Amino acid sequence: MEEYRLELKNVSKSFGEVKALENISFHLGRNEIVGLLGDNGAGKSTLIKILTGYYQPTSGEIYFNGQKVDHLTVPKARELGVETVYQERALAELQTLWRNIFLGRELCNRWGFLDIQRMKDETHRLMTQSMGFTSQAVSPDSRVGKYSGGEKQGVAIVRALFFDAEIIILDEPTMGLSLKETAKLVSVVNSIRQAGKSAIFIDHNIIHVYNVADRVVVIDRGKVAGEFLTKDIGLNELMETMVRVAETGSLT
Amino acid sequence: MKTQTERITPEITQHYKVPFNLRRFARTNSAQLGILGVFISLWIIFIVSAPRTFLSPQIYSAFMSSIPFFAILAIPLTIVVIAGEMDLSFPSIMAMGMVAFYYVYNGTAFLQNATMQVFLAIIAALLTGAAVGWINGAIIVKFGIPSLVVTIGTQFLWRGAVLVLTQGGNFTLEFIKTTIFHPILVGKIGGYFPMQMVWLIVITIVGWVLLNRHRFGAHIYLIGDNVNSAELMGVNTKRTRIQAFMLVGVVSAFAGVIASFYVSYFWPSLGDGYLLSTLASVFLGGTSVFGGTGTILGTFLGAFIIGAIEAATVAVGLTGFWTQLIYGFIIVLSVIMHTYLRKRGD
Image 1 (spheres, rainbow over the protein chains, first blue to last red):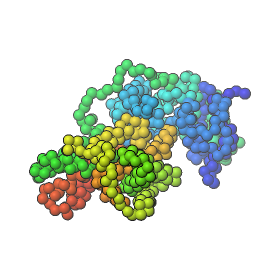
Image 2 (image 1 turned 90 degrees about the horizontal axis):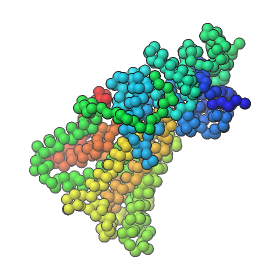
Image 3 (image 1 turned 135 degrees about the horizontal axis):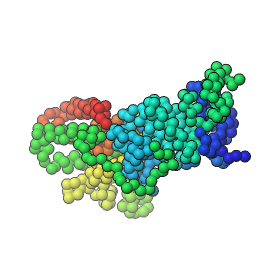
Image 4 (image 1 turned 90 degrees about the vertical axis):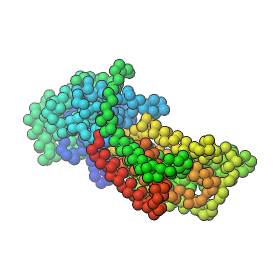
């Protein structure tokens, strides 16, 4: 059997009476970008939060590189190389940029004392060289709360991409971005594949997903409604299918 | 654009540095400069209106004797408030620590060595403070109850425990005067500089380092700012918050020890008068009640403003009845100033 980077087997998640996910089976290959499509409330975000260890599944199994992982937690998922750009961006808006970039994995010595100069150096380098932010406003000592939507998204992306990520999850990454920023983001996602990493791309905009994903998985009402390789399906056909799924809950 | 294969490089040839800019400095440190401005202006007013009092060295010795008792408490409380939490139970923890002190001192009488007994008793007081702080934090975190509500409850709980364990009795601590701990904790250097001021400075520096140069402090700011983000990014928000409450517990117990040593006496009501002046120091110092922002330096200066107002009202010739009015006035104005600075700052 082929070994996937990540595999979910029959994963369900309930919040009390509400079944958010029912028997989801999902896999992500090496060097593959999977687009996750589905209407509001279909369960995309819940699925993501299970993969990142934020929620524990009610039942089902999670495998990383063919190995079963029990009790996935956020730090454990990060150790396994899962990095996420959250829909809500998960920024601390009153704090400075460098604190946000290193949120939850501050560089420190073995007694826990921070290496502030190095974190500022790295932040400056990542923002100017890697993301191309030249604005004086985006300095390591500036506060994230006053940034524009695109700049905030840039922070969230830099934070996910420039660490030891094997699997990058992008939850609605184009939300609030300008056209130019969106184009830049698409090229970032393409570079993920070139670097031999895997990604899960979630977006409302089917065109963006279609353009970058190798495979599209459609989720509806907590279940996998179907999946397609983008090379086998045209954009128009995919859109028609999505509308049909939204109306009837099934592909046919 | 480069790809994500790029990792944190081991060495950076060029350090990120910005040339010093006065306006930016003023903007990023507006809260601390604001409270420093209030502090200096008030002090000038005090000196001008009561030069004989405020230019004499004795008054400063007196301030440094009395202010540290609550200023010490305000340091860990600042950390808890930055984390978006609140602790109202610290006055009771002060007394609770001293109960443990007294029990251990009496229980180790067989040692026949007062210094050793007092040493063990101080350790017991600090451990009790830590344990009580842990219980406070655990209740807040495990049950998800707002800390304000929980610590209103535990404030009564621990005070009640003190009253039951001592049967409401007070006792003398004359025996500590024979031990080295009396001069170490509450002695006076050269007959002028009180040791409790030295301890305040030590605790302030430790608090500042923890908050600004340690991972613990980084997580405290993140939790107070956006607890969801902190959790999504893998910060152990529960453990960090419990640790913050434990810090308040240990330091409260320590403040209880020095406050009792200073008068060589224990009353079961120990700590009762400190609640409001400690809270006022924290908020006067510019720490936001909503969490996420605040500084140790601000709290330190805030404590000295609070401590000096009473002496100043009397010294400038007003009656003691004016004290509270002036307190209230300065606190309200400062809190308005901080809110204004936060809105237009950054």
